[in-house]
Length: 296
Image 1 (tube, one colour):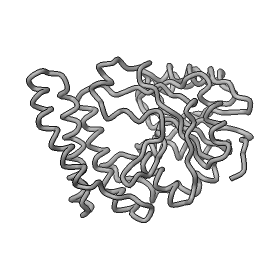
Image 2 (tube, helix red, strand yellow):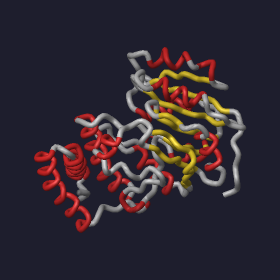
Image 3 (cartoon, helix red, strand yellow):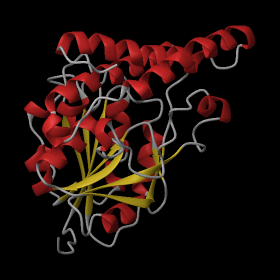
Image 4 (cartoon, one colour):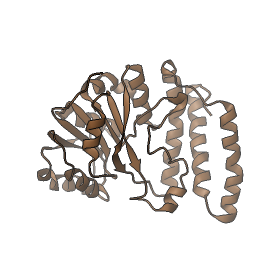
């Protein structure tokens, strides 16, 4: 496709009760330097803490600021749609409220979008997380390239990507939403891009410092929701190449969970890893039954 340059970039950020980390992300955004005009659109999903107050404090520090009430319906995808609806840019960039954008992030993302329909940046783990938190999640490793899902389909990092408005309009819609009992909008985006014949690129210099959730039950719930998404995607997007994992890959992985769980119990070193693997597998099993497909 021909090289494109935006006339206006809209950074769209969905947030719900994010007062703990929101100011750090906003500080990183107001420090971004860009040669073309840009705006910040904050879509509040019904916060009951100081999130809205914090957002308004930054209104005068960006070239153009919009705060939209997206609390009518809970859910990140709904909030993002509300934000996009009031945005004016021909290039849409998305970040999460609890991460921190590195200097030069927005300029690198815009440059990376020049010859593709959508682009994802890279994630950096060490600035906001300690080594123990990272080591407890050995599955968090695809941060310096595009992640891939079942069938090898690439998808963007949900908290660090951009898409041209015409491509967004081609891929977005309520029919693309996952059920409320599953999580994986980033993987849906990858499937929808392929189905619409849109290209996805990678901008390694567009870096976001990614904040991991605290080790514990919340992360296991998240992993279970991620696991539930896989059978849904398998059923919906076979036409674009989504395929279940071969049993030859699945069985050895699950077989390794039991001895690692035992070692964790004896040495107390990686119980979180084993429990999260089990949560992911349980989510896949639950959704396989619901969707009547085999995705273990």
